[in-house]
Length: 140
Image 1 (cartoon, helix red, strand yellow):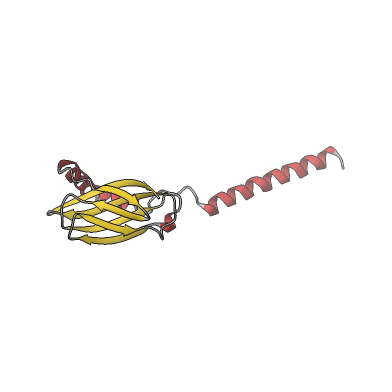
Image 2: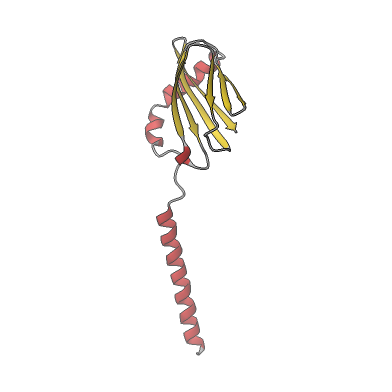
C-alpha cells in the first residue's frame, strides 16, 4: 500500500466520522429548552409576576419542611386551593402535578414514592381571595 491509498483511506474514514457525528447530534436533540411551551407561557407572564408580587406584598410564603418521608407545607391562611408542581431537573419524565385543597394552615404529602434527589417545587394556589406562586428547591 502506497502513500496515496493511505491518504484516501484516512480522508474517507474522517468524512465518515464527521457525517456520522452530525447525524447522531441531529437525531438525539438533547439541547432542548427546559419547557416545550415557553412561548405560550411568556405571553401570560404578567399573571405569574402578579402572583409572585402578591406573595411578597402579603408575606405569604409557605414554610416547607420534610420529616420522615412526609412533606409539610404551612400556609399563612386556613383555606387554600391550588396545585403543586414537582419538577425533576435531571429527568422531565418524573415531573408531577398534584391538585390540593386545605381547610387548615398545614398540608401534608407523603413523598416516599418520589425518586430521591433534587426537585423544584412550584406551589400555585389561591388563599384569602388572592392568587400566589411560590417556588422552592427541595432535596429528599
